[in-house]
Image (cartoon, rainbow, N blue to C red; front, side, top):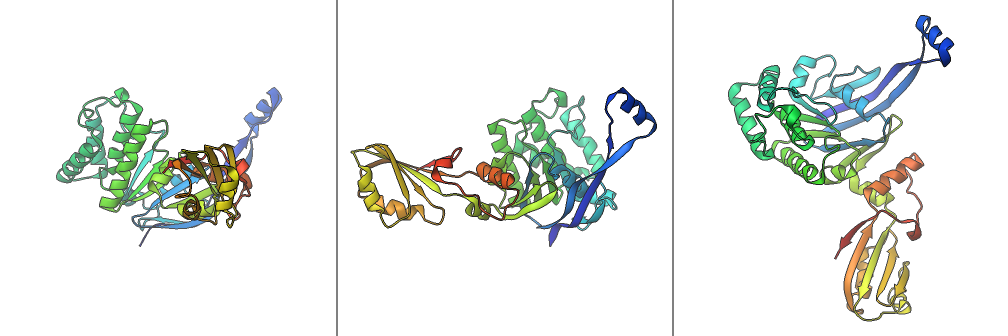
Length: 351
C-alpha cells in the first residue's frame, strides 16, 4: 500500500508586480499588476508505506511548496494528492491524525510555557487518550533523553534541545507518516547524528513513513535509500541513491604510501592491462585514478603483495559533488564528463 500518491500536481501563485519609482508606487495603489509563478509543475510520484524518501532541490525548486500541499496547508492548482488515503486539503480534521510535521524553522511548541505543557496541549488537539499519551511520551522522552527539559520554557532551550522536543511533539499521536522539512538545519554534528539515529529507529520499529527535505546531503545518505530530486518545480530524478552514485560517480582515486621506494614504471607495469592512470610525487607515494566501470579490488590485487604498502586511502566522489553536477547540467539523465584532474571535495576512506 502507498502512503503518498501524487499525480500531475501543480501549484501556481499570483505575485504582485511592483512598478519602479514614486509614480509607479502611486499607480500600484489604484491598479495593481500581477504575474503568475508556477512553483510546482505537474509532478507525480508514489511513496510506499514504511519508506524513508529524501526530497531534495535547490532553494526555490518547489520542495516546501510540495510539502505544504501534502500536509494540507496549500490547495493544489491542479492534479491530485492522497496521503494516508486522505485528500489533505478536503479531509483535514481526520487527515491530521495520520501525519506528523516538523518544520526546521518553525515551532509547534508554545514559547513561554514548559515543554510538558505544550505536549499536554497537543494531546488535547490530537485527542490522544491519556493512557496512550503517557506510554508514548515516556518512550519518546527516554529515547531522546528529554527528562531534564520537560519543565523548561521552550524559549530557554538550545536549538538542538528544541528540535528534539519538536520531534516528540510531532510523534505524540503516533502518526503513520512523518514530514520533515529541514529538521537538522543549524544543528551541530552530534545532535544531527542523534536525530538521524532516532529517525532510523522509528522507521524500523514502527514502520513510520518519512518524507525528508534537506540541504544537508549527509541526512540523505544516513537515512534514505531513495531520493526524489527537484529542479525548477520539476522532478529530474526519482530512484535509488546508490544508482545515482553509480550513474554520476566519475571514478575512484586510490592513494598508496610505500615503506620502501617504488618507482612509477613498476606500478604501471603491474597494472598494464587496466585503463588506469598513475601519478607519483616521489618513490614513497603514488595515486591511481580508476574509471567507474572498474572494480577497485581488481587494481588492489595487482599491487598488494608486490609492493611494501604502509597505507591505502580510497577517495570516492561524494554525494554533494554529484548533486552539484546534476544541477549544473539541469538533467539527471546523462553522467557528467570529468577526469581525475577535475576531482575535488571527495570523501576519503582509509583501508
